[in-house]
Length: 243
Image 1: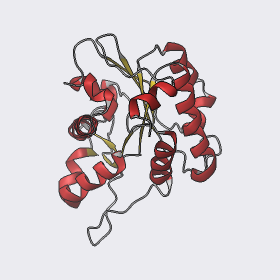
Image 2: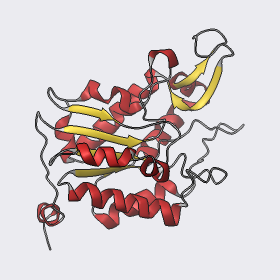
Image 3: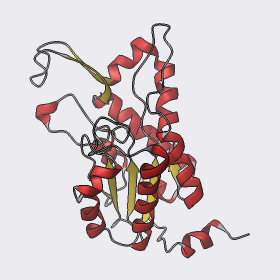
């Protein structure tokens, strides 16, 4: 049986992290970087550089409202490929917008277009001698009246797991990590992690906000930290990029 190292070599992957390494993030609004004018909303990849080793750079290209389909259509993915160098990493997390059937420009059915888009992302990163890393979609804070956390992402997390397994690509199951985290925090405790603000508390939200999808800084920091810790726990090569 081939060793994992020989599999990586066969795939044309460079598996090292150095002070010249860049970590690119391709994803949606849950990972995106927000200006101070949008405070307290914060994407998990916005604070990922708080955990990197000196010299390792995070290029957060995640953008609100994007899916695997629109991220490519808008040439955002093309720009990542153009900037990739051998040995870099690309963290890929979509699903929240791919599921929007009423928005044809972003909708990508889980079992077909979404699956194929992920496979194509992986292949194109490997062609650049760089390293793809899939993440399942982070969970929404959606509790029912009985206090049970509901899953709102359908088949997308499972399809991501399957693609990672089939392609031999590292996977961080952010959906499971954040689901367990929210369940532990509970309906009330988890509010502090999301963009729930009172009217007038922040300039961007004069009428207040009860956003259960997007994190505030406390939540983004917690998610980034759990992703980093999971990379280290699995002994993934990207884990060497983090303190």
